[in-house]
Length: 64
Image (cartoon, rainbow, N blue to C red; front, side, top):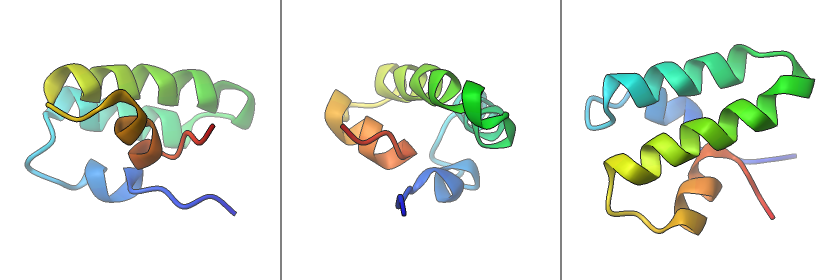
């Protein structure tokens, strides 16, 4: 089972709206599309914050 902070980030006012929208789209996507969309959302979050890339990936549920 994966643990992800992504669902919490979707509701955070501290996360830019376009990142929240990308996360919502990723979590609503079909399983075969989800990883690609989570990677895109992670890139957006990384660019919008001072967080390390690996930390952003963990936050959205991309492990490994």
